[in-house]
Every structure is written in C-alpha cells, then in structure tokens.
Image 1 (cartoon, rainbow, N blue to C red):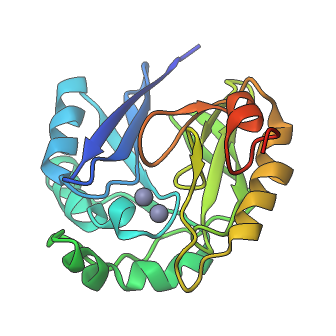
Image 2 (cartoon, rainbow, N blue to C red):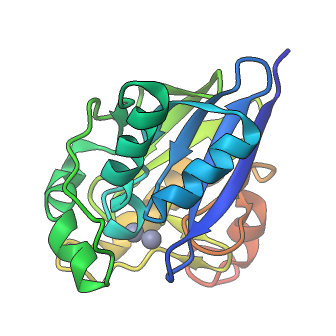
Length: 221
Ligand SMILES: [Zn+2]
Ligand SMILES: [Zn+2]
C-alpha cells in the first residue's frame, strides 16, 4: 500500500505553514495553503520529483492563499496546465476576492484573488495523496474554515482553527469566538485524543493534548 508523505514548508516572513502531501507510488502531490514563496514550493516539488494534482485551501486568509495564483502559474509551466484549486467553504469567498488588497497590506505583492474550482462542505470528502479525508466546517476564525481528517491515519489538517496551546484569532468583524470554541469541542475533540494535527502556524499537536491543556478549549479551563 502506498504510504502518505508530508512536508511542512514555512513560507513568507510570517512563516506560516504551507504543507505538501504525496503518495510514494504515483508521486502525486497536494499543496495545502500556499501563502507565498511559490518558487520555494516548486523547488521542493522538484527535489522530491512530484507532480501536483491540486491546491487545497483550509480557509481564505491571505497568509494561506496569497501564493495560489503564482504557484499555479509555475505549475502550469512545469506540467503543461494549471491544477484545480479546491476548498475552502464558500463562506470564505469574500476573503479570496480581497486577497490582492489584504496581501499588499502585508507586503505580499504576489497576492491575487482566487476563485476555487470546487468549494467544499462538511459531509463531503476530499482525496489527498490517495487518501480520503472527511471535511468538518469549523467557522469562527473565518466563516469558511474547514478541517480535513483522515481517521484511519489518525491525522488532521486544521488550518487556523486550533493551535498548540491556542486557537485561531476571532478579532475580525466576521469573527465568532463562541462558534470557534463550540466547533472544536463538538466536532474535533470527539474524533479522538490520539489524532495528530498540523496547523497553519507553529508546531502541531494532538486533539488529546489540547482537549486537556489548551487554555481556550481545554478541560482545565
Ligand atoms: Zn487565518
Ligand atoms: Zn494564518
């Protein structure tokens, strides 16, 4: 059976986590949240000998999506055609429409608006590196934030919903602190303490460690 491989590439001066997952046999890769530094991402793809099959987004913030168009142009040069842009939930469309302005405000000049080829929603699945991932809609940090979970591998990709020792910021006009906390507790923690996750910033963790010790959503709170 093909194994799933992954690498996290911190991108831009903000050092947010772009990640790449691929299967060993077909060498087909999914790039998740390319916030910028598209040439560095392509360099990594070349080193590993990977063909990109899709770009996947966890949510619409510029630090996760500003590099999508630049990356897809480089992919088109390498592979002959751009790849589909998949996710997030369509409630983040207004953020993806505003990427050029939001990115420029933070000096990410390659930022361009993005219209995904496929929006995703809870209850659907998305295939990453040959494995099916369940989709959970966890709004609050952004209205369209999605979490991708492969229960068999006990692995989740949570974007900016949950961090090691923290949760996504909700001090935006559209932020919803209570929705974020109840989403994490009602949808993610019941999946199991042993699920390991990677997130949009900093190191990953497990649902169990956060269920116990996270100061925002932990039980000790
Ligand atoms: Zn975000
Ligand atoms: Zn972020």
